[in-house]
Length: 117
Ligand SMILES: [Cu+2]
Image (cartoon, rainbow, N blue to C red; front, side, top):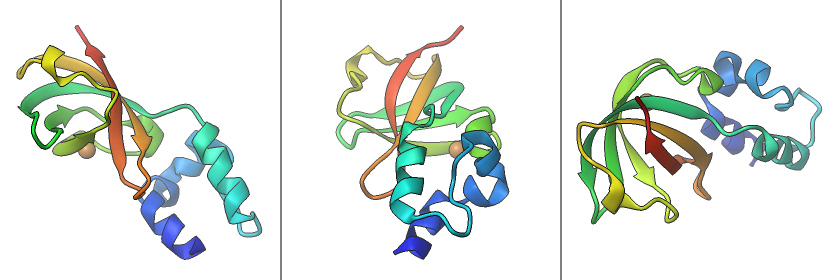
């Protein structure tokens, strides 16, 4: 179980996320304590261009810049969108700023979007 959780944190944990989050697991840390520390850390944010909106599937395609907190490079990718985000206010082609949180399955989802200029 511990190994599984670490895999889901990659690449943030392997590639420097521990510095960003401060309290990710060291060798002797209890998994539950480490998980709690991660949940309480500041949420990762990113900025980019919203390419496409799939409202039915609640998925967005975004070309985003680097997400320093996760050690992600800039890229174009699909994101799932959490239930708190109002998709009707979004426009394809617009610049956005987004906040990520980790879903129950360990994957990142967008839980907040606002216009960026
Ligand atoms: Cu990405």
